[in-house]
Length: 531
Image 1 (cartoon, rainbow, N blue to C red):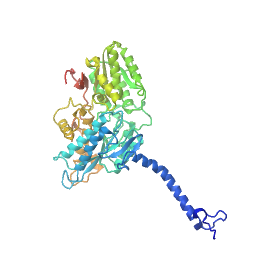
Image 2: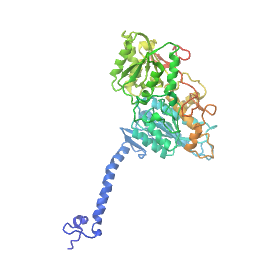
Image 3: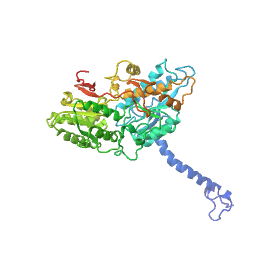
Image 4: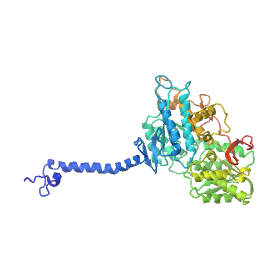
């Protein structure tokens, strides 16, 4: 029997005779090559496949698990495993199906707009759903307006989760998907800046709905003289974001603080304290705090920072005890995310009810995130805190007061015009009208209205490209065209900031056994009374 080099399964060459021809090695080479390719691919591919299949049999090339949640793209009815989103994602699926080519004007193609959001953000709470409903209502309104609709709009939701890498990946997927614009854009976080960088590289215009922090515009908010020294030095928003492709319908924090100052100064309510978290990783806080010090403090009378640990709720109560020790009327600036605001207000009110406070009254002032007190929480513990805070006797009788600058407030806006359109769209879609109170649904509607308005400036014969949509958005300026939003006729400055108006200053009016309402307190103060 010939013992040619075909030993061990006819793959390995004969061990006692070194093969001198290449053909004697080909089977072994093929096996080694296959193992070299397939084993690493398998090691990489199995986790990749697991991450995608763990989110169900969706279009799993666009939805995957990251950081313990399902992220990626969806156009309904898939709701990323979130029961509270089932209804709104179902409406998106229905509207996308109805937005067929030629449904607005003959021979026109439907376009796709992305909605980039953090659907599970603890900092957004129940308002995240409100914002998405507002966006969907904006889509419905734009497509139903036969007098103005030229290009029907389809919506693609991109959930970027809490992971910064997922923000980049979902932004890339939106760009590859051919969206002509993106609304939402998440919160005032570094992941928003990361996503904006990706979309700007693809020349895709972005419309921020609820982003208010300094730096999140075309020039790093230089007009406000921001101070980023307490922010994370690795964050990039201090240089601006979007490279000329980013705008926002939300009022930036510097504008809000200026309106709060105009309320406080004539009323002689001198700020003494500023409530702030210990850590400064959050752009919303780290960019606001220096503005508060600069506007309300001085060398002779600096503001006292009362700090709490956002990871330890007991420290919020400790901070309230320190403020309680001040006599007379006291004003406090709450410069933090509102996820701890209810607990702070309840701690102050409880100690006051027990006679443990020396102040005669306390006014807590804050920026737009304080409107969270009007939104039902997804987290049962946070909702319990919110309801309890609103029901304390000293809050109800006005000894403890909350004053803030909302993004938009349905209690103050005209009943006709854009708000009437939004309310009608909400009713038609079957959305809960109480979801309008936090202002996020209004901001979502306004962001979509801006993009839809830009899209529909392009004629039926023009191809709709992202660059052309961005140019059209640049036409919404003072003295020119304006966006017919629910919160008013919206225009933007050269850096993408809203400049048509300033935010209102409102007082939250708790009502025993019912949800609170608001009254305007600047330039003239209105008593709470009845809603």
